Image (cartoon, rainbow, N blue to C red; front, side, top):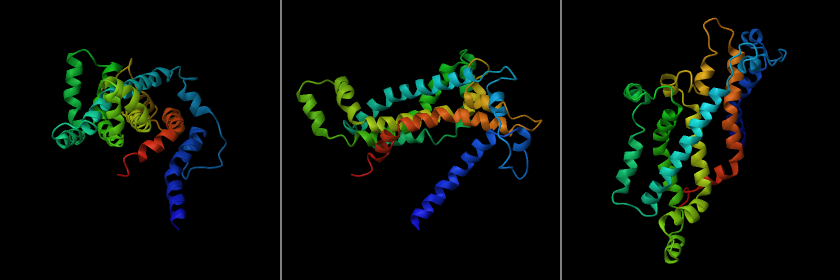
Length: 267
């Protein structure tokens, strides 16, 4: 019974995704029917519209901007989160629990509450419509959860290995690079994937702080929603294409992801 319930729950979550993929291969007229037609003829019209065959608007700059912001912010997060997690787990500082709670408390502020101050700072510093501003913002947004995740992963590393490395004369950077990073590779992969997904999917700040040069893929996707209607097939096609990088990254790191998510579960 539990197996059947698990399969039913999985299919329930998968059904909207499958419906989105199917709708992306329908014409706008068929996609707008109520109830939707499952047996409607398939077409690539929605994908042609997304890639600008008829409109001349290419999605590649937006996809490149999202990739730049997501990858750069993920690298920045790892560069900051791994040393911080090392200090909070393997070499714990005084009142480390207070530091962890402070990191977590920064996620309690609604994102929209910080939107206006960030917009004013970006406007006064000339950083509006700059993709590197988005990379820095995504780094700040994902760093707390990355520190929490990495601390649980690094806490599983045997201290005896680090002590042996210290006896052999290894410095802090050597320990982080040659011992901590290989052992915690599954946890690093899981943290990287989650940070990448959060950065890739973020739309609120990108909608306000980007314009033409640094528009991201989620903002580009919303441009297909018009007041004239008949946009479901194009939106579904755009959503499928925008979702592919995350799916590919998750599939490529699935073995490390499973190991990483299970690290720190058993004490």
